[in-house]
Image (tube, rainbow, N blue to C red; front, side, top):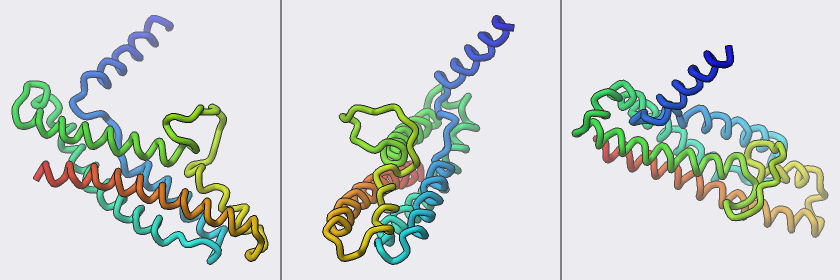
Length: 179
């Protein structure tokens, strides 16, 4: 059984390593982050402005949907892409944009610090930099602590929005290059 399992894992790793386009889709990650942001928005009500984040999520979701369709088409042409030519160029465009978007989504959606901070390797909720918004909802609105936390959350939200728009631009750029 160990020999069979090793062969299965080796074959899966090989196919993943030589694929012209990775078998990853951006839309499911965006949908998960949208759901988390929606839950946080419901918990805070009018205490925090989620509209910039919602707009960025909508743009990214639209770009991801179109991009995933293009990635599916490139995946179906995987054998032709391995040979070379125009299909290989298209697969390279898809692969670069896919890696850029997914890297940005992982850093934004699933890590609390920067790439240069120590990762504590503990479980955390998606969009960890915005999870403190729950504390804001429980604070007295005019308190000093609430105003300080609100300011920190606005800055964190702006960073998340910037990263989501960066991912959307990578996907939109790839779609434009593929046309």
